[in-house]
Image (cartoon, rainbow, N blue to C red; front, top):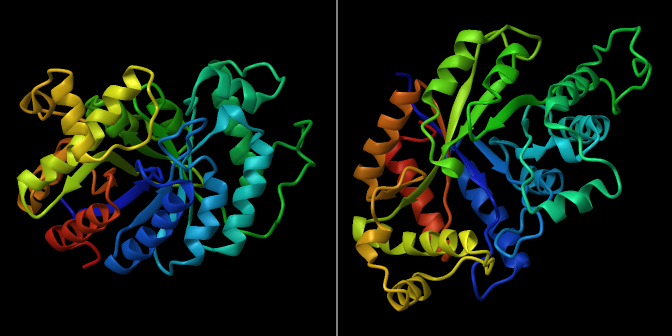
Length: 338
């Protein structure tokens, strides 16, 4: 397998005891670090109506991150297209590509990225776009980006501006296998988010490759996999840090959105609920936790199973320094940027 590239998906988590301004400042700080270390991409997520993540508008965070970095590709992980006009998204990303030529990725998804009420607020009086219309939205977006509308199309004379720019790199995001064919038939990149569903998406990636049709966007298939990662100097420390994520997930499943707790808060709450820490730390398919050697081996095995040469890492901890250290250890252990 070729040298493994590592990128980052940043949800701008909001730890308990801090606020959204701190979370966004952390995003900018960590993006600068990722750029120096040689990570391949820095994608900004889209989440709505939540106390846990500050990343609600990737199209706003992307230029902020691109402005404080030099080499790393910056993009959306991703824009939830059913909420928006494809024309407006095309203009936003044409502008980003104009400002930062050759460095912009447009990752697209169809999940709500929030509650049903948040989706209703985003539509603001419009009817929900049926899921079966998503491929048409995607086609309209790519036509506006590439100025490839059929002249007979009623919108063919409407131009997405600014014109004269290259098209950003296009990726289809998925946490199940249902959009593999959509990405393959349009010749887009395909990013499978195992960190969301915990599902083994290797068959979806295989199906994407088998059905890929070359396009003006890509001549060959390109796939990567998103996976949670918490790496620390020792396994014990990494497991301790991971308690924050495990409690956050338990709270969310119970309808409690309180931000990212500290490991101390998590330990106390698990003990009060009579939940053994060993049970919490049982095998988990959404996140890799361990010391540098353990994480390296697990990530290499994951990449081999999927047949990819790039992983998108998602690191959520209460402490900013722990996230920073995780990135540094990953870069050192896996030779990122070399």
